[in-house]
Length: 329
Ligand SMILES: [Zn+2]
Ligand SMILES: [Zn+2]
Image (spheres, rainbow, N blue to C red):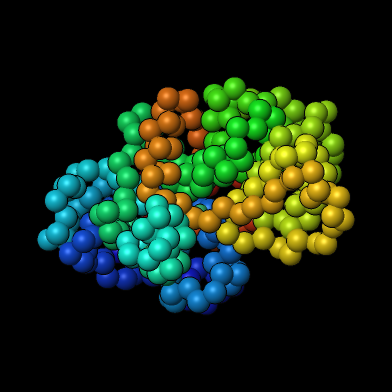
């Protein structure tokens, strides 16, 4: 099969011919129809996450059709359309897993990081960690739901019931979460890079009542803010515009250093917290909710061999909505 290989952090991906993976006893083999390009892929590409598998096939927002199943797989069969998320496997026995917090599992493994992902024509995944994709979404439209949507949703839950919600960084995750937040009756304030009027217009078109630069003060105090941009400077900036008792949620897996800031920004029972990974329950809840909203994703598709181009456009903030690779057009 054709796959884009990361051979060393920072080196351009290489289009290669590699063997089609064989599913283990608990795995399914998928023909990949779409794979979202996520900010986390850039962090792995840049070497900001420790010890990736190398060479590695990136990609953890995978939609495809099952073509073969391992001997212990009973609930899925060839022809089923499923999605593979970031969470590939958890141990099921550590204290986190036993407490329903498998996202924090001591031994968790992640797709497109510790095992190969979806920048390829085929991939395998543990059948206990894949999701059925709701009808009504094309493969490419569904792909961003699997991380931008899912981890965005977990971040939204962590923000609490906050009626006035700020979203910093209006990329793939925010363009989905603004729709969910509006569906829940919240007011949304979207913050983009200063001067990104196109991004601000996009945010307003999806339901944000106000959109401006991250250096601007919104017209109302916020009850919570979610930082989708991996920029530590935004933590004190968001604290400045969040009301007493409010929460600032850092949604990414990596962030530049958070600068020191005066204690009075945190004072008043404000909270700063991170969100790590996802649980299968998050996936089931969000994929049931998405068609009810209904969440519409805006995607820009790329051929498999253009993965580097897609990563470059994502890095420079030039993707409207989400970038998606289509390995088997
Ligand atoms: Zn565990
Ligand atoms: Zn992701």
